[in-house]
Length: 93
Ligand SMILES: [Zn+2]
Image: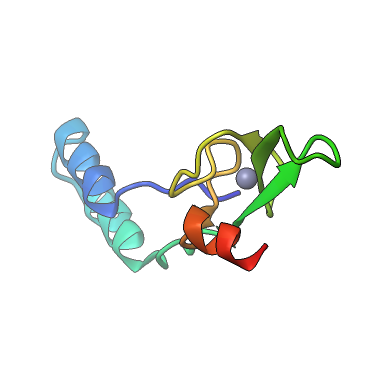
């Protein structure tokens, strides 16, 4: 998975760390030209421990890790989650 960092923070860090030089300007130009990262999209899927559907959790469709709450991003793989609405899920069952 790509690391998602701030382009501005990277350039600010180079400006703070290095003295004026051609190499410093070249490094900043390189960072400015890098493409933006596209986070992986995934969705939460409700999983049940048994047939009675008494115990459940949410599973990331990308890395299959389990969570008890629907976060906007998967804490394990960093995938950006599509909107999850518990009420829509219950209405369709
Ligand atoms: Zn995940």
